[in-house]
Length: 284
Image 1 (cartoon, rainbow, N blue to C red):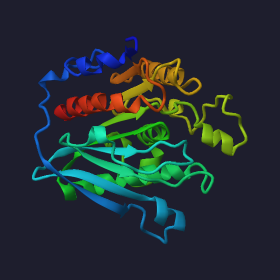
Image 2 (image 1 turned 180 degrees about the horizontal axis):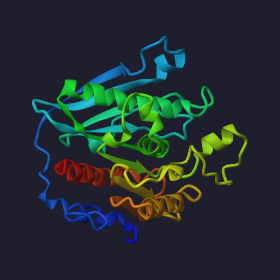
Image 3 (image 1 turned 30 degrees about the vertical axis):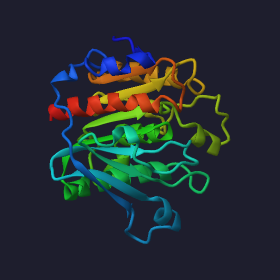
């Protein structure tokens, strides 16, 4: 089994010229062409059957996309904030890269409890599959990602197939999953909703680890430095990667960003996400 790559800040740009975790080199993937971009904002993605006030307020998304081209890849991006805060935004590191980014909001605890925010994340992904073609995007090249709580939601939507099934979709239609420093065990906010301390680990139906399966989409797991991350976040993700491989998933890669803590690891993670998107897109 491959050891996780521990990436020092000064090496990030050098890695872009080679491969990710022993995978195919991306030097053959074309660099993004220069395009103009547009942003469509505040689009509701949960509109049917009398949506709640919380849905009307939080279940909205922004679509950042290139114009004058078609068949581009899309990243659905979920923000962090512990499932209790945060606002949707298109990361600057994903802009002007020849792809679309769908930045989705979702309802938050304690106004709602699990699984409401997972249901919202699935609805946002389903909306993207149904509508990204209207902007010129390729529905065969939709990736799901996010940082921290957003990474947790990306993993849950992509691994536990029931959430997208409720939207009439197969999670395996997702081109790839790329959680940034997400929880692999049951999220600490879900544990808090049950009165469980954050230092007591739980692996149940609300843990991505619980849903490790061999037929899942390609998986790029990014973590901050094990000594600087939240609690045991790196170790959770290392175990997540190991279990995915042990169940027979052949396209799982784990990277640790040496020297970067939980919040700071997102920015150097974007080039690896883009590399992942281009590599997988070239194979579809």
